[in-house]
Length: 330
Ligand code: UDP
Image 1 (cartoon, rainbow, N blue to C red):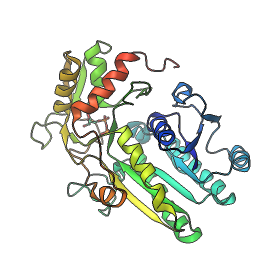
Image 2: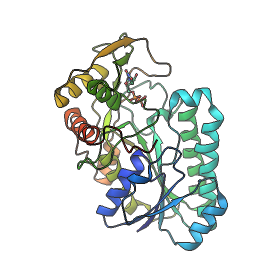
Image 3: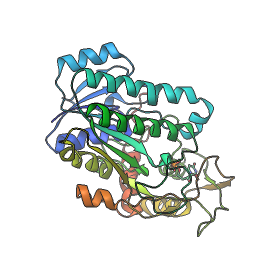
Image 4: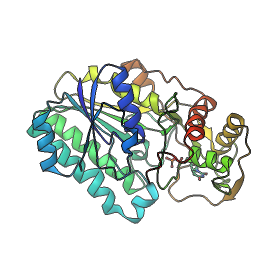
């Protein structure tokens, strides 16, 4: 299929582009490079630098190329920032997405794969999280993703859009060959920050909260490999044949891992000590989040390949060791 990948130069999008190529599809990357990296787009893949909110650029692109499907990864994803500057999130994550969807409708592109998040659930009353549990986001980031989920349902019902929305748990790891990986600026995620602390690039890793009601007092999360996420997205293509199809999937391994267990895994894989500083809880962090992904397993035949955090951290370590400065374009 000819697939437009919005945000294809970002962390998850760039991994998905490679998986698309391996699966025999033809991706075109659309990215404004606000956070993405030009160097993460493989040679030979068409790259269009434009903003999702630029309807003229989108019309030009959809006129030039007949796409079978659009995948959308282009979002701002910092929870703390979304609390401080909510309009940045509503404008990019919602308004720009609606502009993209409108352009798709104008040009008759009726299949969509959307990158959503477990942050749409807020603080869950029960775990593991199943798709139809109540969604009550506790920050603007999660709310913007839920707003788009609702817009997609309306478009499926009203105009026959077929879509799959994936709620990721904690995306982590890097391509197995170490060629691409996570390079955020600023970096806020646990695994890269733990590796940086081990490498001496940071004086210490701050552990946010040791008084949670969890076995070791630190937060539990469900770390899922970025290539596993990508494979689930591609497996959904076959499900989008009937107009008006609306699919939601939670994607995680189902295994809760604490912050201290991640630190242990980083020390084991790197052979280096992670200097740690215990710090207060970070605002907006639920104590525990992990997925029930049995729906994706059942309906998409999806099975995560990376089931242990050691294996997952190993791929992240390969990337950080090979490219200590990341893509070096910031
Ligand atoms: N965390 C931490 N120190 C850091 C970054 C994260 O203790 O420097 C914790 C954070 O409180 C959460 C877990 O690690 O419990 C995962 O955080 P991350 O930011 O990687 O992902 P999130 O769960 O926020 O999507």
